[in-house]
Image 1 (tube, rainbow, N blue to C red):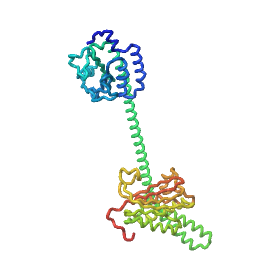
Image 2: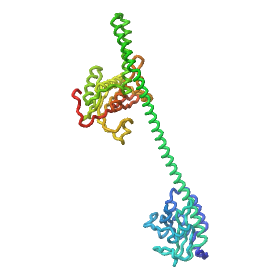
Image 3: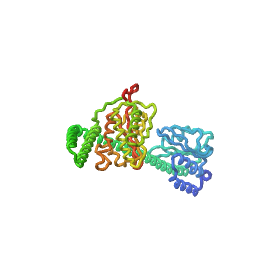
Image 4: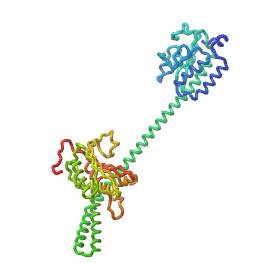
Length: 455
């Protein structure tokens, strides 16, 4: 197939040696900045082959299955549309001259296409053709093809030029493929790192829940064994203090006995809070309308504490099942904490709201809250707030921010225990200097439930 070509014909077909070297040198420099395979193929067709004196150039890209070639770039009269290929030609491996090159992986020069059984006639039939494969990583990535209207237009020099261009193109294809593989590996690493971070966070959250559960279990066992006995001791102590008070008329002694009485009462309250935190309080649940309870509580609070309570009550509030006395005690504890947090004045707000918890919305609700209908009772203040470090501790029975002699705790352990025992929970939001917001979630009563007459 390879035949000598006259020197005059080669001078007509090829650029000068100096221009060829400049073109290949520019190609070598520009290779580093070509960003993708598409740009590479168009650059080779238009800026390399097109400047080496060839009449035309067509580049085909192989598919992943190594079964077809598709026309992806062209230069010359066959491509009058810039970088747009209209109806790109698709050639199976083994079909036509380009298909033979892709299948056999060897370059081909055809001196005369007339009568060649592998030639696929184009709209403008040619007489000679040169075709070189692009091999990358052991795979055929495509072929570079050029045709000429004259017979025997290509020879060894043209084959050497095309092979050089094909080798440089294949090397860049390998770099682009490696870049793509590196990016894919990086994305996989990012995904793996994200999954590991999520798993670590989940594990830590589970460990925290396990720790909380074990702590609550330990406190429950402690209160179950000692609470009643300790309460009996406090009853005896309180009774004897009452007897001593009756037999004593000295003012100093009476003050001392009163201090002892106060300490005994605080100890009894602490035992009650511990029992509530351990969910061992005896509750008498009823069907309640929290709006009515909050309204009555607000009036009592304003009357007894002389502090205004701003109430925001939702219309058509769902009924709940809860112990009314326990709800009043929780409201009182939260209100007293809020008032104490606002020594310079401020507004205490109590609000009610229907809330429907679904799984997609879980991030907006406490993690232990099951999906369903809830009534949210919110108590907020404009006080000093609670620092981030203390927030995890505020529900502990023995935790307090009060000074010595000012009380045994915040009463929040009782609130948490009663809420959990009632099937709900409590959430808190607080920032130093911005006040605190406590949200109590009560499970809504089933549809059709009727409110108790006495509530």
